[in-house]
Image (tube, rainbow, N blue to C red; front, top):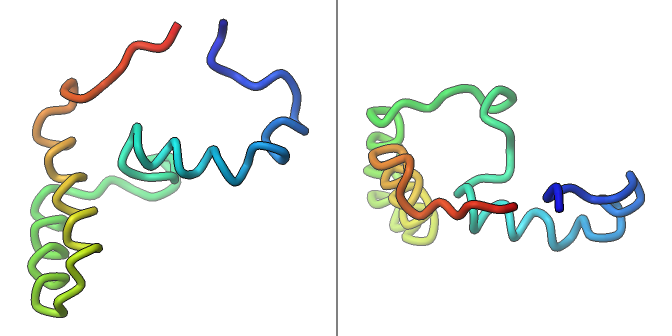
Length: 80
């Protein structure tokens, strides 16, 4: 088991499920090198902004990303 799909068509076929799983595992769906590094201070600012806008769903997502940044090994699963 390599934790990879067998062929490129698998990504297309399972695409609608992949994004949800990646969000649950990593807290995001974009690779960090594509998205750029987001510091905890930037995330804290974004969190405060989301709270001011009363966008509590976004605030929860940002909070979860902050938690993962603060303890990077926590909530990680080993996949064989």
